[in-house]
Image 1 (spheres, rainbow, N blue to C red):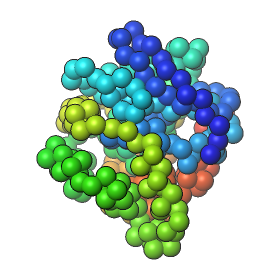
Image 2: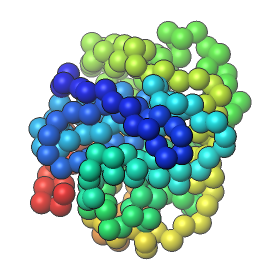
Image 3: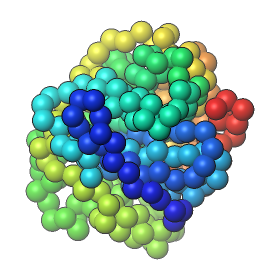
Image 4: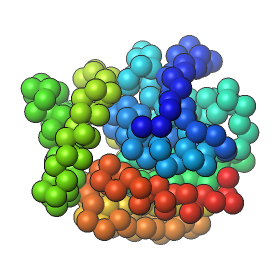
Length: 274
């Protein structure tokens, strides 16, 4: 594990947002997936931090960040991240979004084109009815998940979203990822459902994707069991200045399954862009 610096940012909206910082070089904001803390980036960090300063954010209501006090939109998470970049003294930077974290990342690219030099999206999607999801997360389903035995829930959240061959061939790595989630993914049902509602507002919206002009890398698990590969292909079609890469024999948690391969794709893409 690379060296991390824990830091809190007092935002103008009154919230105190937590992030872990690592590495040196140009700033790369890292926005995590649904009902997850910044632990999603911990296996990518040792590779990415060799070239970039990673700011791995716990979104409002997640991990060590203040809980959201009212309903919000993905635009608000984009605003939080943008203000954090300013507090770090960065006027230009890159953004990396995992799954739901790709929603505020896309909005940042739309709303702050002068600042976002490049964007990478992992296992994510865009807004609109044309995107397909297998077994979409519902409030009822997630409530049942949170009421499960914690050990059982953590195991399901990891083993259920990696490639079957990863479970079979890499039991030690699987257990390490489950432990990472168990140790670091501090969330509550109330805040997770609030984030879920914000996520649905985004995916049900109609946004002008032509506003995204920054170079964009779209990475998908070749056998994603949650977001079928046509989602990544559609996102690639909608974001004109984009490249598409599929990681073989991985599923929705491809960033845990093959972190070095994904980090190398990101590093190669970001070179000379930020």
